[in-house]
Image 1: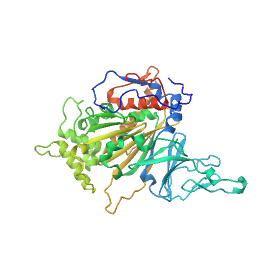
Image 2 (image 1 turned 45 degrees about the vertical axis):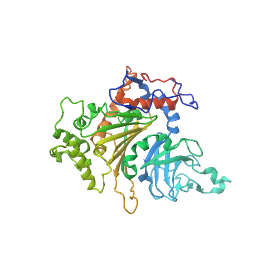
Image 3 (image 1 turned 90 degrees about the vertical axis):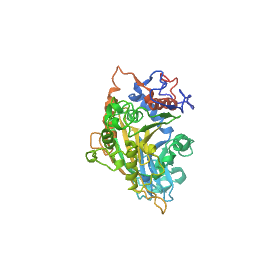
Image 4 (image 1 turned 180 degrees about the vertical axis):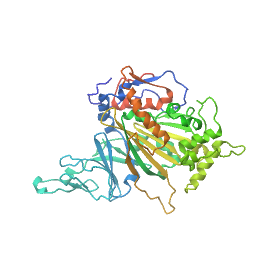
Length: 458
């Protein structure tokens, strides 16, 4: 393993395996892929990530709805670093390091709205919303203070759909790839759904005793559905969905309304219906499985999947949404995108949820952030108003408004982390069903400049 105490070379080594191919479960596997287990538990490895990974790449910070109006500020935190995303009076979105240029105090203790300046609470130095120094109390005592020398340190900001990204290491003239270049093939692949029509409803943050990779791994494969999400099996094909691996990112397509091939006996239509409602009843206007009733009638020549797609259309029509541009397969097929290194997006025409993991203050601490969006009908007058999402931090053992499946993932994360510490367990073993996880590790090796590779089996 590369000495993690040394600075990284200027380049990264080449890819370890081909990218861009579609991978289907159970096809093409020549043996398991393994990676060192201590990547999830080592303080040295976490320190290497802190130094070489997070300052060097684009990362999801918040939604456009968090910073829609002039004077809106969102405080994005990752470990001991903090970036302020600020909507200026001129409507421009900017990013600044959250630090007063006087004595280094934290400038803004959290997100805010309606600000006309950024003022430090320690000695009351202040900056305007463009980051230019505005006021220094008792200024004469400092001699000459050139405003240009004391502007806030900038951070690159860009947007994609309803999402705001920052690049912490690319401010004040630093060079970096564009967000479009970093996202690569993903925006074109997802363009059909119309991300701009989604608005943020809430952001739930859950502190967990788990490494950020342990958290996001739970949203990078469906091999675990048979283990902790058994309620899904009657209504989700968790086996046949194709996966695609790009240079940094990955994708899964998974069909709903069909039973899992893992089941020995095909479930009845009633069992499929009950499972679908339990997992995502809100999509057909049923908030409680207890009120679902029996499966709807299936006309001759149709299937239950056809009926489910029709229910999805009619429910969303009642919300003012016209889904005539989407076929039934698009309504019932989940597109799940894994954005390197720590984001998963679950996409349907009527549903967008984003899970982000963040490192905590040790390798065994992290945060799971769940962004939930609603699709909104376009205003004929042009555009649709944005409202600030509800932001809340909740303990993992409390009631979580994130649905059955995500709640099960939360319950599993800390157990998964504890097992990684056992002395006899030295390597994580991955099948091709878990190819998006080994793609994460392949890219970690590139960004951290770990060469030769510690991944085996590729």
